[in-house]
Image (cartoon, rainbow over the protein chains, first blue to last red):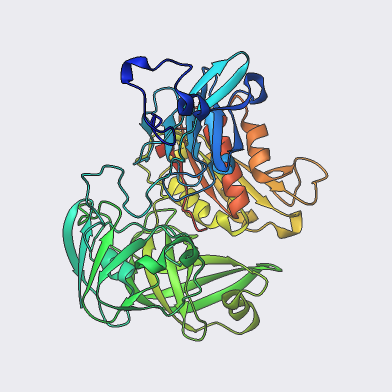
Length: 150
Length: 347
């Protein structure tokens, strides 16, 4: 979730938070486009305040994720195909079920996603910081010290 | 030289001879090192050099642009160790436990080169020792007078053979294809490493097949068709082959394809797709038993196969845009499972 204290001086007591007061939180919900702007089974790339994201319409909903495949940084807006809720990168067939985010095919890493919501005919993504994959460490698990020994 | 490996599967090691690349040394000793092209373009054999020193004979290999050299990343297919080395490899590296023939270094002599079209050459290599390979596999070859290595799929299929057949399409400015096409290469010596590659077919498969190939990408499909035909595979399974070339004059292996179609007695359909010169009709006496179509080969395949897919294995080979298009068709329209789509990524 958003850092509720950043840049706002002294944070109010937790119990006093309400939707109208969580300024950074509200600021982090970004309107991406209209709900009808992305056809079913298609991917669109957007730049939201300097952050590239790809938004997919998998039929039952939308997912927003970083623009590169977590495998070998292939550009998913071009290399990805989406059919029957499954996003597949055509380069090496890494795939994810966009409904459940389960890994499919030879995929070894999860797809990182931004939280999304639909409201008043528009879709919004919660983007408080850019999601990136760690291509050096080869593992998102902080307990995995593979490559970190030097 | 001793090479220690730390991978996701733990520690292992292999030895490397003077002048040998890390990848080939590990593969011939049965390690499951990650690789695809084995010739410096795909970047799949990335590793991090955690200790020791390597030399890089071809620092301009395209895949170096895909890795972080400043952090010590190397391409195992391009590096020769100068002494003992420690590698960290982002994959599960274990000793292979399959019965498959391990790849090995062999000497080869070029035999019987012949031009199939103005820019396609077929030739054979007489190997210094017999090699067994699966249909669809490739070898990496190196000629003494030409820098770099190239990967070519076997056209023939035979177990324990000392002769392999390859086909090469001339690339403008390609050093190796210039060497092949401009000189008399009969009797020239080559270094051969293989077999390599995962896009294989075995007669034990129990599925129909669809093959989509462009240009010299037909090579591995020819090997698959030979293997399937010799085991009467098409008696019980359907085969659909789509072979894309620019024009009728660019087609090759027509006689062989016609023979496979005839031998399959209805089990095999072969379509030639001409991208730049539409055929006058869908059949022609010059292409007996073959269907002719106009368009990009993956689009022709999609159109021809609509509503006719089933439980199939898909093989894809050719230029990168065609491969990407064909894989899209196999995922979206054929709905093939990911492990039923087989190709080796060379770029």
